[in-house]
Length: 73
Image 1 (tube, rainbow, N blue to C red):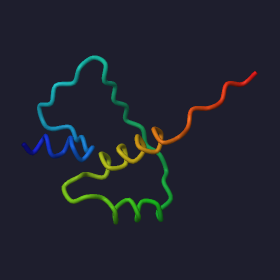
Image 2: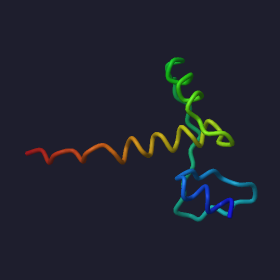
Image 3: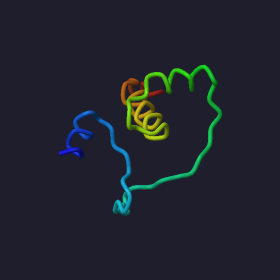
Image 4: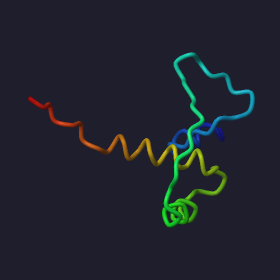
């Protein structure tokens, strides 16, 4: 039930001993983010969600909400 709640909220966080299929790729990449942005991320982060999962979800939403680029001649 707990997992179902997380899925319905759109929050997916890897659990321990979680099997990862071959189509999933993880990369350990570090980026510099403005401290004001990090403060806002922390302020709006739901209880029980780690920062990495929350930032990943926000990035996925932002990418999904962008219109596809127009075809160039």
